[in-house]
Image: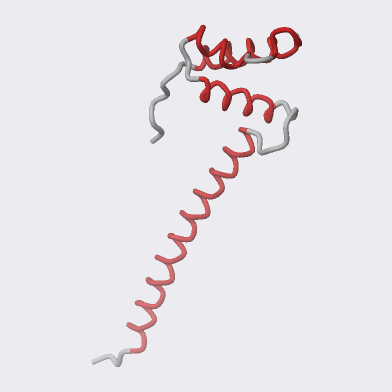
Length: 105
């Protein structure tokens, strides 16, 4: 279970949108993240991370998109579960094979 988020999704989206719009204007581009973070009561590094992820999701920056990362995490969970099930099946098969090898009375 994931930890609860400190900031609501609406605030994240709004803050990210404000930074992207501020960066378009060369006069307000410098220090946009810090200024907007202070105005909204958000930590500047959190806002910087949100902006980076938004740019990655929009393919404006190289990296793994959120949807791809979620899919990879899901597949990794599935692989762990399947490996565990496979190990259980191997143990059961070896147990029953040993039972068949024992002489009957």
